[in-house]
Image (tube, rainbow, N blue to C red; front, side, top):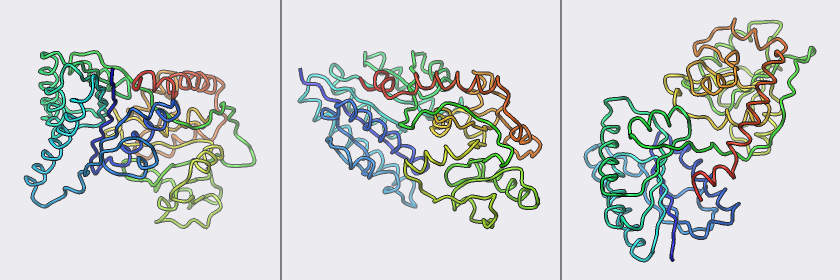
Length: 371
């Protein structure tokens, strides 16, 4: 019996980097399992994908369709989706069975999904990864529910997944289907929590990446301003050069890192930090997951997260809500992180780490989604 696996990646301008990151992790794990040979990638061209030896069918991304005429852009997106559907239909005709994994689809991609499924419904297994939450009256949500209801009625084999318990609860209700939760896989090293405040130095706060307003930039700027005005600093603050662009960094308490860190230096930075600050806007990140948060737990670096975010939800599972702060800057809340961490918090962090090692592993990712 001939069997093939197809990975389809639809990307948009706003989250393009994240989408390619997801694809890279999928193929990295398949390569580790020596399972790349029967996979085909369909999606935009990118250096993340080029390095893997597998079949590829490159398609334009949304940015290449950018035009002042929104109607024309939509027509181009629909035509692109139909082109994908016809390409896969051709592959399906030569195979006994096809497994299709679709990431981050949008309304235009329904055309592709329908063409693929309708023309080969006896041969195709769909796995759909939902990574977003939609408001109740969202047109996309309404269309999604109708579309998958119809596919179910004509006996398509479809499995639904998300990458968080919160999204799993949301989509299982909206689709009236069983929805699985996939791990957020990372290849970072595992280091036990052995945190201790050293009296001769200030705690190091690490703000990863290039900060944006919704990812703690306002909080960072306020903290830098306050710390700059003090003779005796409370913290050493570490982030990328881009994050410090509006600030003087000749103070020894401010450490400006390269804007891009390779894996080795990225892990070293976590090792040098006492806390990683992930003060994300909860209105934007209530349902959005964070691989950096997972990595901080696995690498034994204590996260400071914003209340009402997905990270807050995860920390509360292990009675670690004291590690969460308000999204709006409140200097008094940071006093907690100047003191010795209570034994109970370190014990709960180690317990959380053990659970994460098991769940967010490459083996579990492979067995849950790719096998």
